Amino acid sequence: MDPSQQITVLVVDDHPAVRAGLRALIDAEPGMTALGDVGDTFAVAPAVYRMRPDVVVLDYQLPGINGLSLCREITAAIRSPAVLMYSAFASRAMLVPARIARAGAIADKGIEPRELTALIRRLAAGENLIADPSAELVAAAAHRLDGEDIPILELLLGGTSLRQIAGQLNIVAADLEQRVDGMLARLTVGSYPT
Image 1 (cartoon, rainbow, N blue to C red):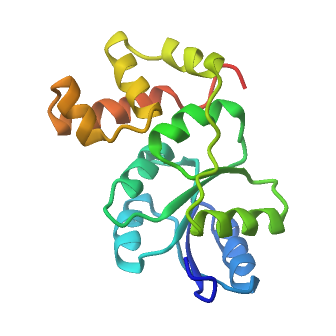
Image 2 (cartoon, rainbow, N blue to C red; image 1 turned 90 degrees about the vertical axis):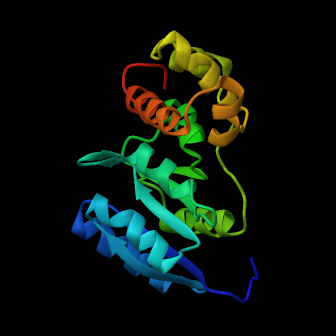
């Protein structure tokens, strides 16, 4: 990204005060603009398509839809923005599902404002800040999945696209997408190592 260009950001959170705070923070940061904010999860995909932000700050836990599935939907687009998963419960256990959903970074809602804007800048510059999950975390995630999901998990963590996985495993693309959404639902942070 050209350093002289404004970094554009879309904020997605179900709490109006959080959205307003994040917009104010982003708009006060030199070189950044909040294009808007969305509280209704069904309005996110159209807003991303219409606004074309560089970065989406996406609440991890949203009502009515798994934030990870929404992240996967956003990052599946051809010219997709980077996604920063934003959570009050950020932990190492989020690494595996965030990698599957193709998030670019994870941030705790308790993060310092300057650290948050620094993450946004790095994502806008094309960096992926999701660390490789440890073997322990991958094993714990695999334990929560069905046996037929394990090859999919391994391929996703290796960076293989859904289109490539569908071809390699001879799975209909729509069925694979549903299966990955189901995997993400089962991998939502809960009772495995953090």
